Structures are given as C-alpha cells and as structure tokens.
Image (cartoon, rainbow, N blue to C red):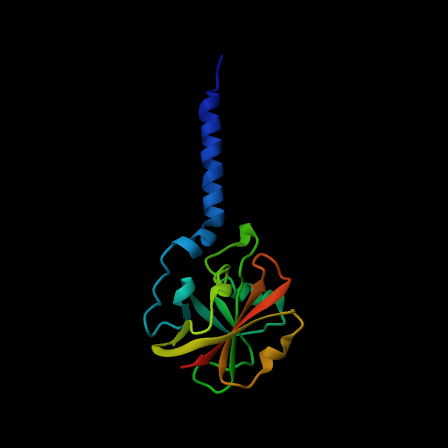
Length: 182
C-alpha cells in the first residue's frame, strides 16, 4: 500500500502559492522597494525618468489614445506619447500616459509605472532622454479630472503632461501632472 506524505504535499502547495503571489505582485513591490533601473545608454531610444517615484520607462511614440487595443499593447512596453502631441524639443504639449495599476495577472514591468504619480508635487523633476539628448522638466501643477475632460490633450503651451487613472486600480478619474521645460 502506497502512502502519501500529506505534510510534504501541503508544504509544497503553500510554497507554490507563495511563489505565485510573489510572481504576480512583484511589479507592485518593485515600485516601492526596488532601486529604479538606470536610464539605458544614450543612443538607445527615448525614456522617461522620474527620480522621486523611482520611475524609469521607455516612451512608445505616436500612440492613439482613443484606441484601447492600440494603447493597451503600447503600455505593455512602456509609457505612451499620445499621437498628435509634441515631442521633446518641439513647441507644444507633450502628453504621456500610462497605467497606475492593472489586473494582477496582466501586471508587467510597465503596467504600474505611474502608480506613485500622485506623490509628485510642485518643484519635482522629470527627465526625458531622447537618444542622448536630455530634456528636463519641473512639476508646476496637478489636477484630477473626469475621463471626458480631454481638452488638456490639445493644449498648445510648451509643457509636459503626464496622465494616469486615479485612484490606482480604478478608471474612475484621471490624474494629470503638469511640468514646464527647464
């Protein structure tokens, strides 16, 4: 007669469950506890960096903010620059958006990059590095708006606007962070 060691089976299931939880929620733990990754080499693309909240992410350019399929795919690879808005070094508004969180089974390295965006205050620094050229911005305002208040997407002032959903984990409202070029 074969007997199963139930203690071994129980401990194995507990360990497997803990490993699954850590794997699923690691991106959220990393936002608060891990040191942010360095901005990649100067000639390797365009990146957003926000030191205060340990955020570093590639910027996916020209993303249609009205097409959920397009922006969801882009946000798996970084933060998204809204199509039709300015690029760093150009006059006009640069509009960048990203998730503050996502469903646990869809969390990736970039799905929670703006989780701590609400912690930014006036005077905080934001940097965009575009193939070695560094653009620096200073936060000057913060607003919470309804999703249908899209007029900020079409502003002409030379500024950077960062957007995410708020409160984190919902799509109820939008948090906007406004920054001026230095």
